[in-house]
Image 1 (cartoon, rainbow, N blue to C red):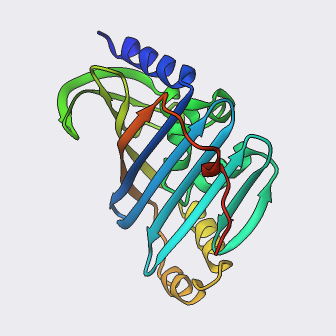
Image 2: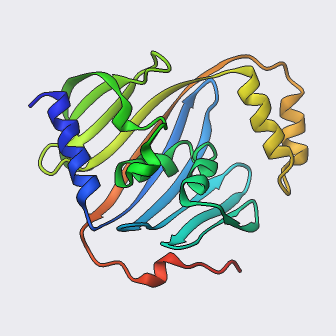
Image 3: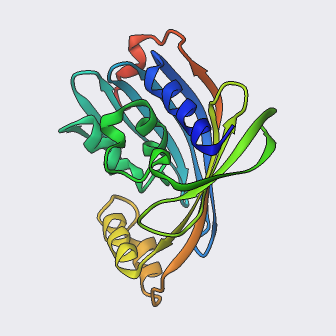
Length: 232
């Protein structure tokens, strides 16, 4: 089976499933190593969605966004807000979740994937090898996005076409880093730490994120209570 055929099967699986859930983790290596995050995803078609993640940047921080299919809310940096759309909420969480808020949601909902950097927009696809991942035999697909030449690799389950891992390389410009520091400085409890970091000269940074998708369940019932949340 070719890389294009494998991606086509992956696309059909996620676009047509009635529900989806997972748990997973993202780790980061390279010029900007990070302790990473742990995350969980829940989805019921057409638009009930929940994505939550815990980060470990000096202290454990819990963030979440959710939609009951009508309204969307986000709880970031200890602040609760209503979002203008689910797509807007996911876009706002993409950077701070190392892309994990976007990757699977873009596969599940076409309106989220349109115009974003996601697995469906890879070009120059090729099958690198077959490899065991989380106890499953996977085809490893390589490609890159039109906006850059940096490599993305997907581990796709050979038996059922479930996405098991994404490895993405990034090059972050100085201006992008400055924007990130400004956002972090404006958040509660992080001013001192990030002002100290930003005092050092900034240079472009190349790093790699690896997102592992565990406990993937497709087409199983998910209770409506999952798509509501009340902060403590």
